[in-house]
Amino acid sequence: MAGIGSGNAAGAPVQGQPQQQMPPRDVADPREGQPNVTPEEQAQYDQFVGNAQELIYGDGEDGQPRVEPAVLAQLRGEMDQEVQGVFANVEPPLSGSPTDNLAAATVMIVLVLEGTAASEGTQLDDAVVLHGGTEILADLAEISEAARIHSYAQEEIEAATYRAMDLYRTTSGRVDQEALKAQFGEIVAADKAGTLDQLLPGISSRMPQEGAR
Image (cartoon, rainbow, N blue to C red; front, side, top):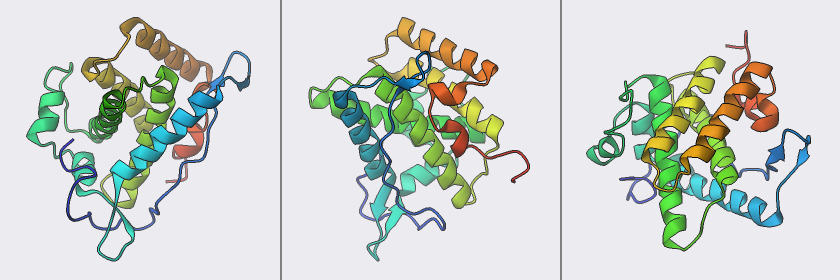
């Protein structure tokens, strides 16, 4: 992902968006209602979201964390040739809508993290990618709003989550298509049943509430 984590100058500060350290979050088994995660999986998750923060934020000239310019550009729909190439074969094509921009920016970060892990001989757990990707998407939505790019409604966050999973399915070389299809089906079913927060813990708290905008 050109520019992310590698530029000489960080982007302009985003008011109201401090650097965040992701809290540990157990990957829960909605069937049991109890955490179903090993210490190794939790450690991998913590490292995954921590590495994502390093990609999203750089140090400004004043030493304060600032969102990387490439991240803001992608949230605005400004895709360089490398990014366009990654998504060249997706169906339907990227439309430049706020939902697509959020989904694509999220997937690019996940792909970078995935590639780095692979180069180090690490196989990321599917649940880590799913839950970590959801956390990244929610953070990028907050950044977009703070930067006055777009303020996402709850239904847009949900649509971007589904779109990101579809983009990831198309672009990731490590995808188990059947497993991802099953996970996607579980998310859709949980959303319809009103239990999405059990499958993706904390997602509702990161979404705008009706009447609050």
